[in-house]
Image (tube, rainbow, N blue to C red; front, side, top):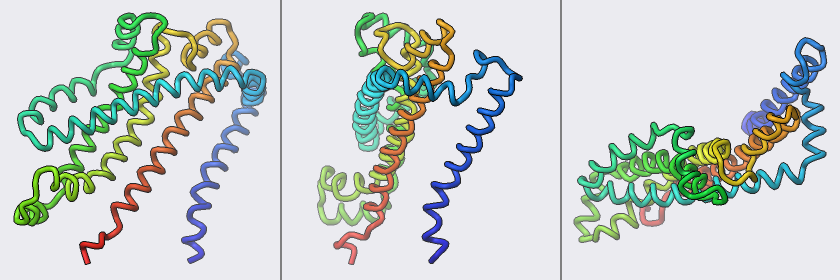
Length: 262
């Protein structure tokens, strides 16, 4: 029992301890004079910039976070809907497979300038679409896999009860796919943040994290650029932790036996 109780604490303490050790070594190495400050600013200098420019940092995180969230929600909705259609109709499945494979290998750096130019220099639409495209693929793939997890005996039972396609989907297929959907959303959340941030390097409004990293680096304010990188990491962690919590909740609910199974 003690080991079970200590396991959650260990999972928290171990990465925190590793992070503290890494920051300590980084601070010692940066202050040793072996490398110049512009090559590797110290954690202390980065923390100073973080405190001094906190409003600007979090304003930039709000812009990038909103673009990533819009893309994540849009990509998730489209991915789930298309996966439902593909699971119910083989022609749609055959047509969707090559499209999804093509989208999976589209490089962001090639697509971002095109979409930013298409929607104008003052619009965030291109960045949101890029985040949505990045989120779409893992959601679609995982949802389609989850929709195919039902056992034939269960489908035959519902067919024997003359259940309609919608009833089978609502009672059997979709509940079985819910944990897979949230797994796809968890993977997509990190990709949406990364894609939204990378898209900010290629034009559009200059209010996001990526734009400020470029500006700070170009003006030799390297500690400030690293502060924006730290904010980007925190933003990615927030997205990941929220979606991971949603996945655990969905998995726990999916693992509970229903009243009809007794």
